[in-house]
Amino acid sequence: MTISTSQASSEASALRALMPALANKTYFNYGGQGPLPTPSLEAIVACWREIQQLGPFSEAVWPLVNRTTSQLRLRLAEVFGAGPHRIAFTENVTSGCVLPLWGLPWRPGDEILLSDAEHPGVVAACHELARREHLSLASFPVTGLRENPATTDAGVLEALERSLGPRTRLVVLSHLLWNTGQVMPIAAVAERLLGHPAHPWLLVDAAQSLGSLPLAEAARAADIYAGTGHKWCCGPEGLGAVLLSERTLAEARPTLIGWRSLADESMSESRFHGDARRFEVATSCTPLFAGLDRSLALLESEGTAEERLARIQRLSGRLWQGLQELPGVRPLLEVPPPAGLVSFTLPSWDPAQVVRRLGEQGIWLRKLDDPACLRACTHVTTTEEEVDRLLAALAELIASS
Ligand SMILES: Cc1ncc(COP(=O)(O)O)c(C=O)c1O
Image (cartoon, rainbow, N blue to C red; front, side, top):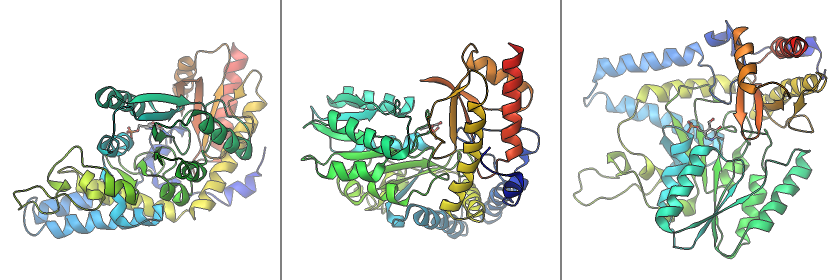
């Protein structure tokens, strides 16, 4: 094992004690959804109450609505290391990817180049966009890259190099791959695209990176960097954010249009916001903004993004190491995970059955289909004891077969 118990308990997370969801289970599904801390739930309820007291629809309520949304926009601007004018609020990761994607100035024959590790929703959106706009689609392989960061980075850039063509207009690549758990060299990919004659846009799915990795460099390098509050940020479901590059702001047209896209609702002729708000649509749930803001503040109180990642890595490393020692179990990665996603196979077991059997013991992980495997996530709120409980439960399962 990579870390002593005394070292780990000296790092015990204050946040963990604020998450009722963690009191009655052993939880490894942060990449699916993070538990909501009680103070975040309380911030949501308090905001909701205040809205009812002041409005709900009144002159008196708008300052509260504006203050709540602005505060979160400013906090996320800090996280992204970019101006708040570049942030649009969305409902989830997928809408953050898709809303600006459809607004880019496509020309028939343009090519979209997707990594082979993208999420099905984003892939489906690209396919439909290609059908409607007469674009072509191509794929570049990253799922097979299982080695150390330097080798992985080189592998990504080589695969990209082999797949880029003169018509490539967009590259789609997640920052942290949801299947293998590898981190992609987003800034280096952006640098390479800058040297391409057509300077393709770079769309980055940040579902697994926002809240788990230091990400400012990658976020600033991407044209579209879309994340959500409900996974690693441990905010409420239903609120995400996308960071857009200056050139995306200059060139992309709004897509799903509503009153929040407009700079001035009173004008008969539509005039969209000059900033990223042109990709926002209409009424959304303001209390969720208060909840996510609180969750981000609580995460920040657990340490800097670098410190949090170091803790996440120590726990995922412990799990990865323990998995190697179980007969027949194979982690997907050949090296300790660079972040908190630990995927592994358990030959001769149906992954769905493993999820069910562990769930019966209150241990929650998930299965993935491509590649077929199980995935357990460690966050700053994970404990060594939880990691060891999972390893023991797997060992017992294997022994029983
Ligand atoms: C990489 C990735 N992209 C997109 C999604 C979809 O997220 P959302 O429901 O927030 O759009 C997920 C969800 O697990 C994901 O892991």
